[in-house]
Length: 207
Image 1 (tube, rainbow, N blue to C red):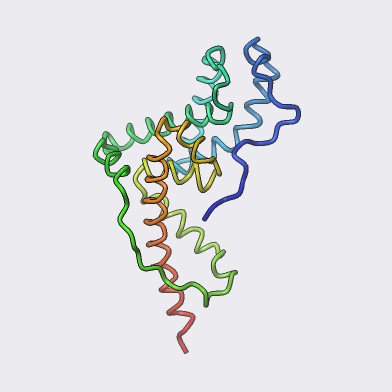
Image 2 (image 1 turned 180 degrees about the vertical axis):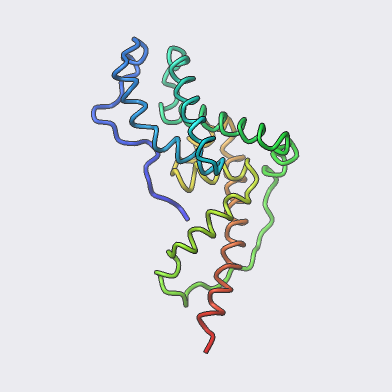
């Protein structure tokens, strides 16, 4: 389930923090051009609404422009931008769900997950079956079922490819909390995919 996409898009030459601090508009335009795609995609997967994702994208760069003078480079530009975007996306979720994202949900996300789960044996399915549009759509729907605290960690680590450390910095969490949430998310999705492939295996084995 891990996507090998680099979360820090290559920049040739590297974006200059000094130029950004000096108010270089062309450098900020390069920053926007470099990170718009990944940030929009992340916001869309969190919110599942193109207009809300567009709003998050615009607000992210608006706040980045206003706050660039305070950016000291202690984290990467990508991590800094992701932090802004995730905060905006979660605020949008809270507004939409009218408080349904509760502290209890966050506390539950940090509890040690209980293994094991039964996992279907997928060895008998051809590789193309694992990569079907239907399977991807099922996984996307399962990701939407994750609670926001788990969904965000899963998206940052397994879809965008951030390291545990960068994910922790982005979310202002300990690395242990990130690992716990990630494991809970993976276990949930593994269970969902197991159910899906058990059904598909049953169909394949039908005479």
